[in-house]
Structure formats: structure tokens, C-alpha cells
Image (cartoon, rainbow, N blue to C red; front, side, top):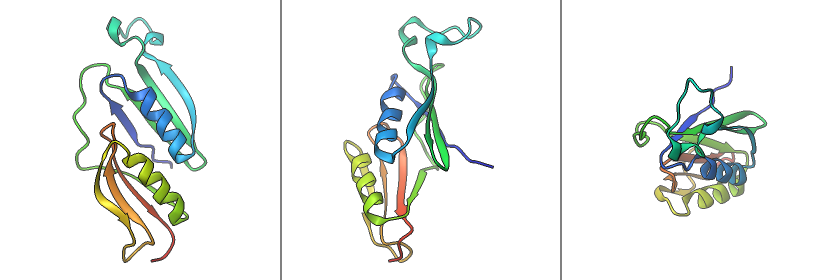
Length: 137
């Protein structure tokens, strides 16, 4: 079994966000489906034709998926975060700082009793993240 977070973006920001995540987290864009390419039985507003109906970022051990909110605004994330655990502290801290750019840090990246580095943030797209590493404190 493989769990895959699925994110929804308002204002047509899915392509930008997912491209950013691929760059920061070292993934590769996979399937990208524009709203304009949806079958006719799924009518799309003209102003949303360039939005994405689906997008994937592939990683060796999983994927992150998302789409633009084509049927109306999505509520902000509440009660869930996307957790990313890196092998090494340096990689986790670098990704944390890049995701935090333009966002809001809710727990600064620092050593904890369980890890050499862990932090929490909401990025500029409204996605809540937890980043840590497997290195011991």
C-alpha cells in the first residue's frame, strides 16, 4: 500500500505549487491534466480552462498529487499536515527554509528530543508541512 496526499489549490495555483514542490523536494512532475482536456461531460468554466484537473509529483517512494479547485473554493487545510522525513538534517533544513519562503513558520526548524531537526510551517500556497530527519538528536 502507498499513501499519497492529495492537495487542492484555489486561484489556479496548482501547476506553480506542484512545480515548486518537485524542485524543493527532489521529485519529478508526472501526469499533468489540464482542465481543458477533461471530457465534455465535465464542463469547465472558460476562465478555468488553464487550471489543472490533476497533477502528480513522483518520488522514489511515493507521490504527491493535487489539482486546482475547479468546482469552487477549497477550505484551508485544518487538522492535517504533509509530513516529509529526510535521512539527513541538512536536506530537511534546506527544504524547510525553501518551503517557508513567503509562508508562515509555526515551529522553527530545530533539534528536538526525537530528531536532529524538525519544524512546521504553512507555505505560500496554504499547505501545512512538517519536515524532519532521521538523524538522532
